[in-house]
Length: 106
Image (cartoon, helix red, strand yellow):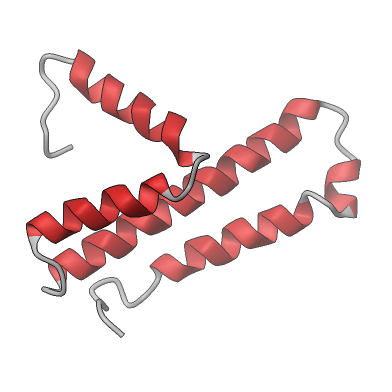
């Protein structure tokens, strides 16, 4: 297995996302009356999946398993494989593009 820079903790993000997904169909959620509560839980699932992708790609980059070019190619490919990630990534991209003082490293 490649990576290891973060001691493989990125996989916990997917575990948490799957736990939340399971909770959406359990007695925990049926107690909520506001429909936006379940939507926020679905948003959390998407954000956790995106975070896991970023952490994994950075892990491989910092561990020397990926070159900088490969990092960008794989990151784009993995994010594109998650259609729920598209609006989030576009919003992040637009927010950094709209700020004249935004650093490309943040």
